Length: 439
Image (cartoon, rainbow, N blue to C red; front, side):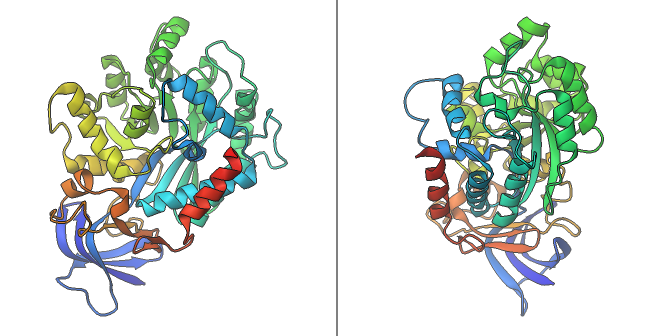
């Protein structure tokens, strides 16, 4: 058993100073008050939070950082550059890149990631000898980086409404929904990992097949989909089906309590009602949505309706869930002219408990007995946090990923004094992996 003493901790009941946590294996065994660290306890000085959950990730997009952000263009021109990187990946290079990216996440306090995984086959669409080789690579990458993962195995069958796949997209596809079902049903990601399902988008999975993906997911896994990220997607869906992407997904039985809509930037009032009625989640990725000029989603309207929000770093323009959390509030201030639409504690809940829940790790995201033993400690003596009180507002509105000094994931110490304990030189690992797929 390992014992940690937390100088300041955010617990389900609020902030508390002087907290002792006993860890037994992967879980918290006990949480109690302690004014000072007893002998044998590991002191964590600063503000300690539950582990952060990155609910939407495309690990290989990290290779695009600073390569696609300058100059003009839009989502669709950015996608062309992204496809060029996708063409370069194989199981070995994907393992190296994803491992380095997940290590960067661990340094930022992320203890669980939802990898929206559609790089299934070799270029041209030929399956590897192990049809799930790429999925196994990404799951192994998370284990080696010391974090948990939900591999959101993605169905991707079309290049758009009524359009064939492009040559690059062939490797994303299993040919038909039966091929996807057969492959994903045989995928075992191993320890510390879970399988989830994903519909890439309503433009990439024909309406007749979405219901089969949803039916498979309803057997006990989570289901995610990109939804209404761009106005063009809404317009094309309306032209093809006479309804919004959310309405189409709902008609297919996808919108349920296990469903997470990623982005939801351009939702209608009726869409929001459907998510509320069906207890679904919406995952916002503000740094990516800014970068791609997607727009600002209706976060306040969703929260008012009772829809749970989670957060993701998506394209990894930045890996910093504190920035994603404050982005939800600050971006909305810009478009509404109003402050305080989201309390700091609510934004932290989106980054922790709600994120873990939408990835099927419902026993995580809280510092309490029985939960996964995830701890993220923010230093309160950095240039950004010095003089700030130990409160949720400091985490959301002052701290950055660079202020994370200590991370425990599933009871395992992963980061000490800002250094990753499994991959000590994360920058070198990132640089080498990215050079392999961009040189």
